[in-house]
Image (cartoon, rainbow, N blue to C red; front, top):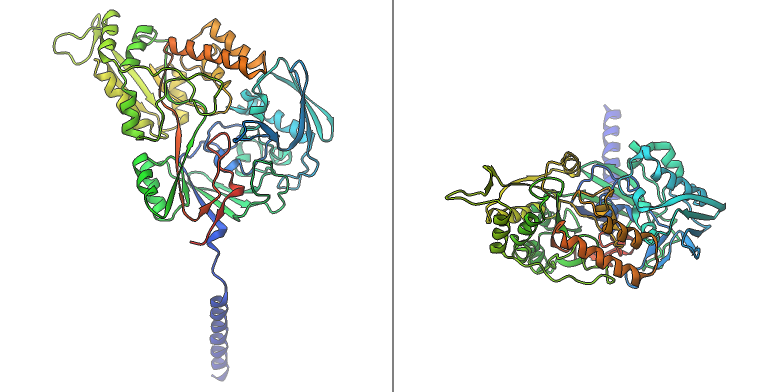
Length: 531
């Protein structure tokens, strides 16, 4: 009995001391973890193989690039390459690499690592969706010494430095690429950036941790090392859930907030609104010129005239977004002239359809030609505000007697399947980027994303010349102005609005800035104040 009593007393003492020790422990520092909301759960997050802009939000802090684009000056600055030289004929780019860089797994960064990265991206068996096309006419790489490498091109390629500044061409550990392969690497990513990749649970979260060894950041960063210890990214694909997640403190930062919610939250002392104009393409719908009736220019003109873009933008985006009038947004493309706005003229649209034989008879709701109804299949992606916009586009077309079958694709995979089938008349997709060469993938006859099915030798010539025969920005601007005008004259696309990402941040978030690409935060500079 005495032994049991002694054991009981000892247990009480141990528990008491444990409780006292716990009480004396300082509370977990809320400034050590940043919670960031993502608005899309990509089907894959290896940036070398996948194309989503969303993946760059976390991964641009995991990877460094050979060069960086300074958002203030528009100039390229050193990254993992200390300097570079371009041959007079524009065919050879020689990069001189930093000698003090290691990947997160300890593997040294050198010319062999660069070559291994490019081989991984360009391997046709790996099916790179974006990065491979960004390398243009790259013919081969030549290792000159341990820290010097030459890129040899088949012909000049003006966008190369811009491509090399993007996360899709971020440098990954060759050891990790080889160890995990294309199917598993996305779960075990290894870069050289200010944050280390810790974990990816699909449709749930991505976790990064500060890289304490980081000492080679580019001049565009304000901080030498990251301040926040851990960053956890959560997925909020339902736009209606985002403001609530901020108010419940589930996240500290969230982008693509609906405008009315952004204005409401910004009026609070707890949050700030950070609007960021995104360079690249507007929210848009491509017309399929390979199938009737959108193979007829007059039908495409009628569909364009029937859409009240000003009303759509005001209804869905308020005062936060410029109306889209061009296949390129105005943000980031100073070399390209602004086009005059297209008019909203449903009466003229009706006349054009009458001319093409699509007639509205008697009490019919929809037009017919030779007894066949005028049906337009409209396919919209699920992200952003595409579903709301598509409903308003549908209403505009129905107003002139068009029967619209609207499909909201649940993800990029389904969107691509529909596009591959050719069973559509208008389809929404857009890419973002800081060089107008992105138009080549969409409007050249053999472009990977030529979803219009349009083929024009003159547009092909202009696109190739702008990308590959000159590095002079003035001349490139002249060429792209001609390209944009040709796309507009042929009504290949219905642009709705230039993208402005409405980001809401909790007031405790300090130093939030974004890269030249617009989507990607410089997380190394973010600090968290006490709540």
